[in-house]
Each structure stands twice: as C-alpha cells, then as structure tokens.
Image 1: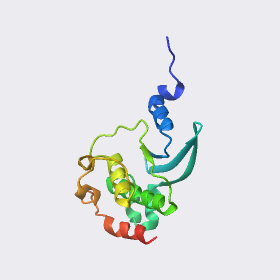
Image 2 (image 1 turned 60 degrees about the horizontal axis):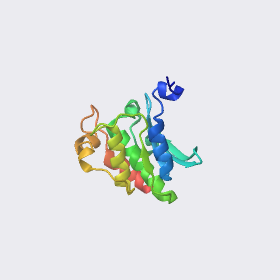
Image 3 (image 1 turned 90 degrees about the vertical axis):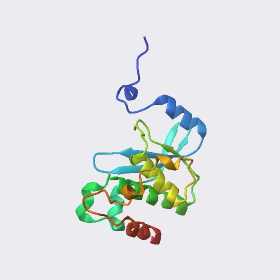
Image 4 (image 1 turned 45 degrees about the vertical axis):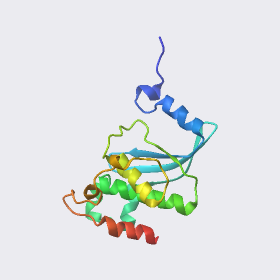
Length: 162
C-alpha cells in the first residue's frame, strides 16, 4: 500500500500539477487566498527550487486609495481584480517574462475571485490565455454589489500613475 506524502494529505500540494508546471520552464504567478488578504507572488524555479522574485498582497491597495473603512473587504472581488491589475503592472514595469498562473489546490469555478485576478492581469497587459466568459460580471468587478461602493476606476488610475 502506498503512503501519501504529508503535504498531499494536508491538501496543500498537488504533486502531479507541480511537476507539469516545473517541466514547462516558465515562471509562475502563485495566487493564494488567506482569511484577510489575497497574496500573489512571481516565482521562478531552477532545478525544482523556487525563488520568489517579488510578491504583493491586497494590503497594498490601501496605498492606492482603497478606503480605510473598507479594509475588511480586501479579499472581495474588486480587491482581487485590483490586486491582479497592480501585479500585472509591476510585471510590465520590471520587464519580466510572461508567466503561467498557479492556483494551487484552490477550486477555480467560473466568475469567482481567481478569475477576477486573471482579468486584472489581462487588463494590465499580461498575455495569458483565458476565456472572457469565465470572468465575473463588470458590475461585480466595479464593486456595485458591495454595501459601500468603492471607486475602482479611481484606484486603477492611481495605480497607472505610479
């Protein structure tokens, strides 16, 4: 009987998917969700050793005009979209290679947060193959479904200025 690896038992690593990503030879964008924030990291692998080039979390949106009173919603769909947009702009500014997105063990259903992150990356100018029908609706991305409206366009323009 085969014993499972510890990280597989804990539902943290899909080793089959990881091997395929490593054999591809491209850098990865690792997307992770915590209880409070969204974390994105640009990871390059050499001989199965991962090196994080840079990373951001949705907490950085507070510097770009995200309302302080709404800091509890830093993992909402508009925050995830803006985190993807900010991350994509940083990749463009640093002139890094086009990466592959790694969602890990996260379930990726259509019109959810991982796809809002992808839309942010695509809107920032990163060329990633996705289908537009998987993105959340525009009114959800712009924050119209939240209790307190957030001016996503203003935050996007602040990101573009810096």
